Length: 147
Image (cartoon, rainbow, N blue to C red; front, side, top):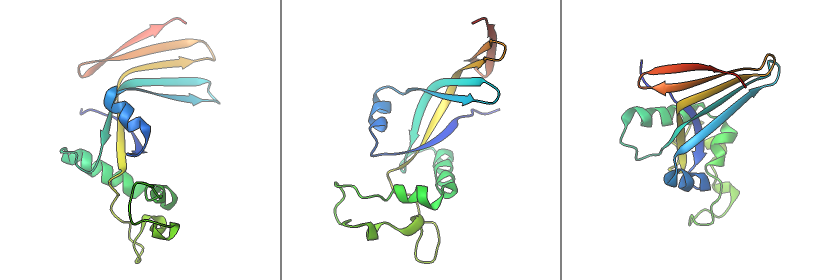
């Protein structure tokens, strides 16, 4: 199979975009309260913007934009002191939609952020089971670890 990434979104105006440009190592943690399980996924972050040369990633960015709620899309049109001509909330398109209700194309500051996993650290606190999975080429090395 092909490569699989964790998808997130961010705003190009966020400090994290500059930070990722300097160091693209990233980590995401999921905690499941009911089962007392934790997944810590680490790997390489990639930011996909409107000028990304990879057509498939550009399509993924557009698809992610279309899946957002209206309120989430509006955030990417919020006022920015550095953007001339936008003086009030009235300049923000309602729901990121045009007057006919169609979703507008994403603004340039809408970025798809991908985490390409290289390590997954799994912990199940019910019985203190821990497993570390490491990407090795196209395969994963799975190692039980005793906490």
